[in-house]
Image 1: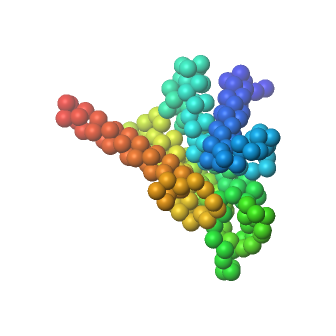
Image 2: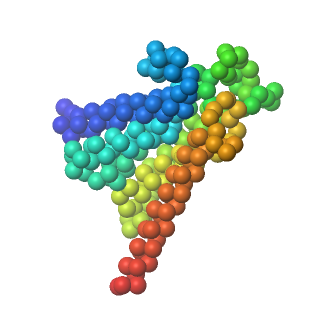
Image 3: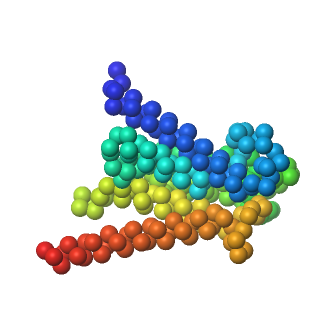
Length: 220
């Protein structure tokens, strides 16, 4: 029989998945707000396509915060426990984007081109950005989960921070090759700005940890 702890973990994972999808949908709606203002009936129809990785990450973060308040378990431990779920959601978003015709790259006649539908419904061979994103994301999360960290370096939340940072960086780099229409600020796409902000936060986190370790060694 499945233990109560495992049942609770499964139910929690499903809850995080649901909130992540809602966050991914809200993020897409906000990015394309002018379109959805005139098509309100399409807002809940996420199965037609329209999910964003940044929105999913924000949704997952809010879910972790809520679970932390209910379970009284540290957010760092929760993030480590559900890191595989994050990888699964990101891969699903990449593949959904491929089928829905969002986040596509430039046309190409090279052998590596794949048929992609654009927002106008035309299908032509393009750079395989969705496949690259899905493969790199899955590979990165798997490597972080399987990597044998030394016990002294395996701090709670470390795997989650490394995994999330890698996912964000992959999304940001790939976004530089996207040609689908998207809102921009100073000539830079929204997801690229999101990537830069999260990378700065991650760097600040690691620098603060390093400074803390240095202070502990000096004190001892």
